[in-house]
Image 1: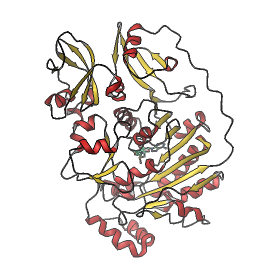
Image 2: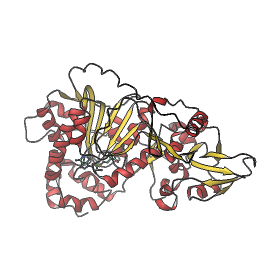
Image 3: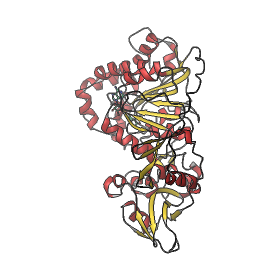
Image 4: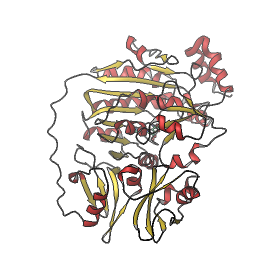
Length: 463
Ligand SMILES: C[S@@+](CC[C@H](N)C(=O)[O-])C[C@H]1O[C@@H](n2cnc3c(N)ncnc32)[C@H](O)[C@@H]1O
């Protein structure tokens, strides 16, 4: 393994007697991970239907190792049903160790492509708000897709600089995750391209960005709220020193202990400034001490008075008359929709999360759950709504076992012959499911199902 000399020297000084063990890791295979979407399926149920051999990741309850040289879980219909996310095992840790409960307002500030935001959204179980932001517009599109695939509806997807968000969301969120852009030293084994990128932009470049992001995030956290800062790099200037910097700028913050694991290492101090003993509570993940790539995590709490609860904003009553076709469709769904949270923009109908501030001039990719489109007295339900619905919540279902060849045909966008499952007289919008988990909609007429699977999500287009 050809590592840059300055990097080698730094790691030798950091790891001392462990340095040789660290180097040996580069001879080992990387680890592949799969995380179950508990918003759609319990871990127990998933293990009953998963067709592969999976080994538990010991510090993540819904995480599993799989053999990435033998199986490809991204080419399975359950992936298209949003039952799991494929993620490097250490990278599962930040969203896992940020305590999030249903009903909270949660921000993932550097969220694309959604590896952590999907877990935060799953933990909310449809209650509260997930705001997922990324500064890169192209990456934010992938983020939106992953959140919709996971069936998360109580969301805002943004494409903004953190400084713009902090003006709108001051003291607003209960929990914030900052999975900061970093020099990626912990990923050198998994992805050799990271070495070249490190040579172009190293720790000095990123630590400035990280300091600015963490202070902006701090102002968006409610007093009493918690924030988790993580990177996938080893350099102290991007890790402990960023935390020291936050504590200097915002003394109301303290470092908290997080749920441990025998493979975790303590933070190693900031190396230059006055040491804060609490930095020991931060966590290092080293690939020679556990089965995952290098990471750093710090869990922080903002102390202070909780500002008086704002009177909830006046509900924006749905003023115009609800289009009949939309009303009929919503009545067929066995999940309550609060009519005051519906918004229609042009043809598109959205179901807004509760308690969001007036949308200022921010760049949104999505506000709420896109329910569908109103077209010439018709309502066409969206792909996002299909992923949001559970089988028992919609009366018109075409459920296929995974082995049925029509599952892949459907995912490829083909029309399906389904007269063996429905009578000729039945017609309208049907939710296509695989083993009881939704994939998308189709429109039934005369025993044929016209395919309404979102073209950009099709089986071929992701290969
Ligand atoms: C480590 S990646 C995030 C990975 C993501 N959390 C996940 O688990 O899938 C860091 C992200 O930060 C974004 N980013 C870079 N600079 C940023 C900034 N100043 N504000 C917000 N996001 C930024 C990058 O576009 C990148 O997507």
